[in-house]
Picture 1 (cartoon, rainbow, N blue to C red):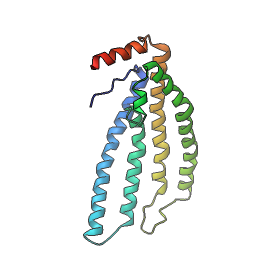
Picture 2: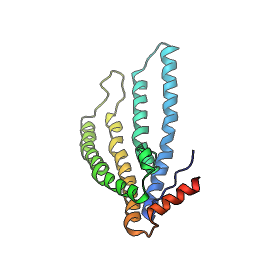
Picture 3: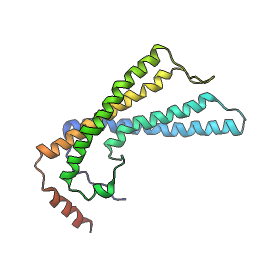
Picture 4: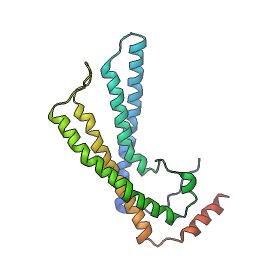
Length: 191
C-alpha cells in the first residue's frame, strides 16, 4: 500500500504534541498483547479446567477499553481514523484543510469538551463511593477504569490541537503552492 503524503506543514508545537501521541500509541499497543494473553488464559480456564472467573472477564473488557480509548489520540495523530477517502482523495489540499478545520471546530472539539466535562464528575463520584464491580468476585477500584475516559479524551484533545495548528498554518501562515497544481503534480507523478 502506498504511503499517504501529508500536505500539512509541521510546526514546533505540533511536532512536540505528535511525539507524545506517538509514544503513548506505541506504549498502548502492548495492551493488545496483554489482552490476548488474558483471553487465552480465560479460555483455558473455562474449557480445560471448567472454571470461569468473573475478574478475568472484566479484565478483558478493561484492557480492551484502555487500548481503544488511549489509542484514539494516536489514531487521529497518525491519520488512521475513518473518513470517506473516495471523496476526500479527489479534493484539493486547500479544500481538505477547510473541511478539516470546520469539522474539528464544529464537531470534534465540542464532542471532546462534552466528554471531558461529564467524565470528570463521573470518575469523581465513582471514587467518592469507592465503587467496585457489581458482580461477585469482580474487580475493585471501578473509578480507575473510568478515569481512563478523561485521560484518553485529554490526549485526543492534544492531538486535535496539534492538527488545528497544522491546518491553521497551512491555510493562513504558509506560502504554499496552489492546491490544484499540487494535486495535478501528485497525479502525474503517480502515473
